[in-house]
Length: 253
Image (cartoon, rainbow, N blue to C red; front, side):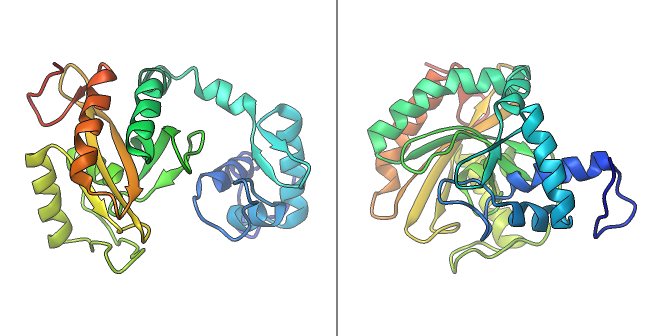
């Protein structure tokens, strides 16, 4: 199998991976109403000619990595989810957070999610409530409560250029660094209309018994909801996961 690419020198494997990577981008004009991608959008994101993209997509559909729906759009297939589910850490996190996330969404009326740090983004593993997907969404680190938790306790690294999603998005540099220090002291992160207007969010770290932050657990609600009402529910949900929630030294109880 061979095919031309707008980027010379790419192997067939690289092109296949580029097709799959197209589904990790959260935004785009080529999304179907329920979140799938049109072939034209896959080709654009993967930087491939349409005939090459079509051939690779068909092979992935035959293998089970993608699924084609009646409206002509494509979504990640069950074969990929089955493979991803064998990874111990994400699999365990999804299992222990699924019920607490549902209860958190019910108690707050918001969208509850758990995310991990992956390739410079907050990768959502599980979600519940209005607008929650089945996982695999990627959120910006600097503009979301989930992302800020992962930035605050993640591996030390400079924060590069950050996209400004709304007028409230905090720029990189001093303001963001000062906020991250406050987050580490308080044990939770807030984001007020920084990613989307009309939405506010809070998140807490989920720690292993050794004290390492394994993930972030958060909830997003309309901006009319005071976050002070959300935090107690959020902390209870974190405690119920069996993973330690809160600042260093905190333990479930």
